[in-house]
Length: 340
Ligand code: 2RA
Image 1 (cartoon, rainbow, N blue to C red):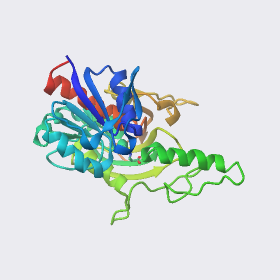
Image 2: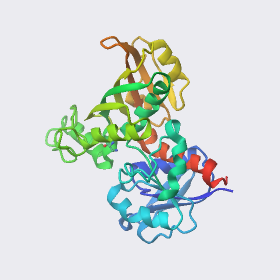
Image 3: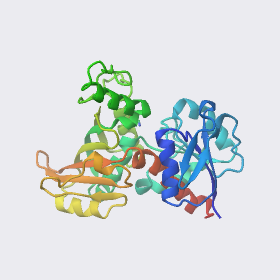
Image 4: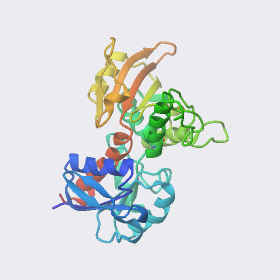
């Protein structure tokens, strides 16, 4: 006995990964609906060894459906999430629309799975921003051992975080640099992304930070602990998939690097790859398609009393979005819906 599951945004990068991961993890599905906008009607998407034809999200009736995974952006979510929730379908939303709503749980199952039980206020559960998800998976086990005071994070985010057009822009712009007459001007990004780094993701805020940086601060506080101070610099790099983060942590008490490494080795969702030698660390190209949050370069920060530096890499389409949403569905299945 399984669940009736709908995927809204089934033709996007994240929507396709949601279908892939539901199949890979053999989530108990009795019926599945791939939903998309009218212009994508009939597009074929894969679900394991099956092929689904997309249905029209606008006219879809969510009545009798158990779970809907949403990956359609905040604007469309504003229209369709309340409709699905009102029909009794629990929405797991990947957009930022509901993340900061006090009546909507923001969940990373390895960190705060219990928060799922707050779903019933709006029948909606929010998925965090991709750059937040991998960071809090790394922070939580360390915070449980030596309470974190402050986090300084620099991110190196892949272009797939911006969608299919950005992947095409990086590819074509890179190619165009080698083929005279095929130069590609920046369009998705304000500056060239090929062989470059852009210190700007999302819109600028009043204080000079960007909304991506604000999200990492606000979401870490909601998911892990509101007392943790976070400052972030989020940059876009010429990588197709896989976000990397250099994280500096200040604790309330001293935490030895070897103990930190042992704690992380045992932490849920974490894979430690940490040898002080050539190649003894993880890079984005190695994380693609994997479920794990990889942690390398674990070392003391001796410039402060209780400091530690780590390097965190994860597939932003998986742990950063689709996998986390499916893991929330798994928690719902085991604790709330109890079929399967
Ligand atoms: C990005 N975190 O990387 C944002 C949204 N996916 O572009």
